[in-house]
Image (cartoon, rainbow, N blue to C red):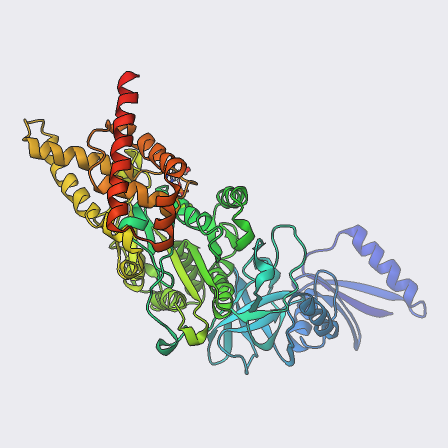
Length: 586
Ligand code: ATP
Ligand code: MG
């Protein structure tokens, strides 16, 4: 009689025992068998001890085995891929995307994975910012190089990296497809199309991170970049190569200003890039259809991340946009790039940094949060003529909370940019749209690039409005006002009215010139406040119809000579008379 010991972690049922005994007796009929059941800490499964022989089907031994020769066992992947197949799989996957030549000699393993951030063990030759391959088709970006481990952010689907996945270095910094084939496309930050269109060939690629142009390669901002928004082009002018911040609370028309600026570049030979960082999908959908409606997608690329994209993808989106814009710039083109918005970018970076266990600073942002924005915005430039004379104009957007522009991220970006357009909820809700607070908005370099005619006719606007806002406070008390005060209030209110503009209706230079001329030379005095908008519209139509020669010389030379100016005044005077008479009758 031979005794067989059966170990299990929980007591076996009699049915289980019977089945086991029957099977074992059939396997060995030579001798009578006796069974003894033992409860043991083997986690799960059973273990059968037959004298010297041990048949171990316990979970504990399985775990030991995995730990011991983890390199040899089959890679327990969903599709049952074995370890040796992985390099080939990755290779084919990779060549589908970008033409990288991965270095398969160097391989590490994921030892922790959470929320799009992984820790990798065994990557000794990894470089900062290097692209890594994870599992059977994921990508990651090396961010933290520590003594034994590398911290990386997963760029593909956040769930694509799991504990135990193999990780390979590629020897490459991330590159994305660039060039004219991206015009009219909507892509994700890795350059993959999101618009259902054809594959992007990626014949031309560019590193998403590259040094900003040197001082010697730049020249000063000297050409205007017209946004078509009267208030901006007159008082806060933007030049090609400038970085102008659009800042304001939520729902104050920030995106609309950027969109109008893009629409206004139609026919001006300026390429545009719109980078959506963690935006609502519906909002971006609306923006893209607006651009399409105005025929602006032809010269625009949209780099899209929505709020449900992972933090790493949101983090690299603006750098991808910058790379696309830069390629055009070095080809001698003028480019306008919008980053909508950098507050969400900073939040995405904070999430990554905290997961990478970097020390947190003010408002829990890491210490280098300034650097991520400064190195991005420094890439905007007007290149010297020797370099081709191209330019990148950047319009970063920052969202404030309750108008607090002295918070951490807003002050950072204000200090990096060459000025800001400050939008105010209060103005927006009182119907002043675009809701630009003229007192707090400034453009530090655009003035040099402004067209002389526009500069001349808008030189007094800023002061007028400031004066008006100041007196407006007193006027609220309802006390009797002097005539001169009334005149200031009246003209101020009309100026503010004249600068109101609907979204999606950017103005041409000539229309702006005519409107501003009428406003700043006091022609609105006789016009009732509610008719100001209609008056300016009709005035321009009148010029277009009756005075094309005057408009032509204005557009050709950008200025009027003395005789033309007298003629200009006469035409407007006559039109004012006609307009007031027409409205008096009504
Ligand atoms: P968010 O904080 O959600 O990104 P935002 O500051 O980018 O908002 P927009 O989305 O541009 O603001 O605009 C908010 C709303 O105001 C939109 O419904 C838009 O149609 C409207 N709006 C923006 N500008 C104007 C304008 N000049 N005239 C009339 N309506 C406008
Ligand atoms: Mg917006």
